[in-house]
Image 1: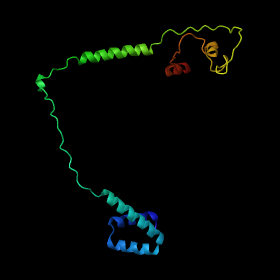
Image 2: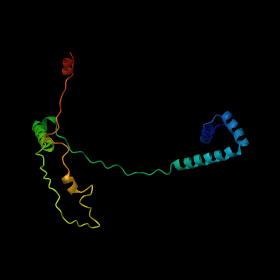
Image 3: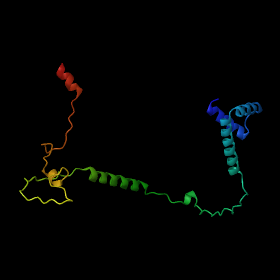
Image 4: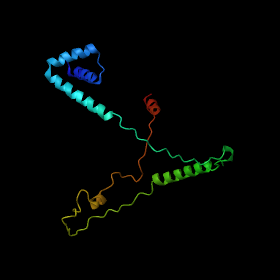
Length: 168
């Protein structure tokens, strides 16, 4: 018998959910297999302990719930209508556009003056990086820009119609 099936039958027997004829067949099987009898005893003990843990103890009386009265709401016709919501919405929109413009508006490019390195005596300490190190600021300042153009990147659209007209 497969162990999965046996475990399900043993659990059902421990919970009292087996039909009498299936329970009799299971008992006969467990008499022949002593190793499975030990597993059955373990399952029985686990079910017994679970039942004991789930037993209801003495009922505890809780104090009554203290309910606080809710403040009275004025009738709907007496409530003031909020007439400011269009102005609040417009102010939020203007503020969002202004902050977005400031955050994403490119300013003037920074002018970097590259000077040839002066002949100087290098002083290296144990805790400082050499000035020509890969991660040094001086090396970064000496690097040439990768693009020769002072303009930013440009997008060019080549339409398929231009290609079709050129091929005809």
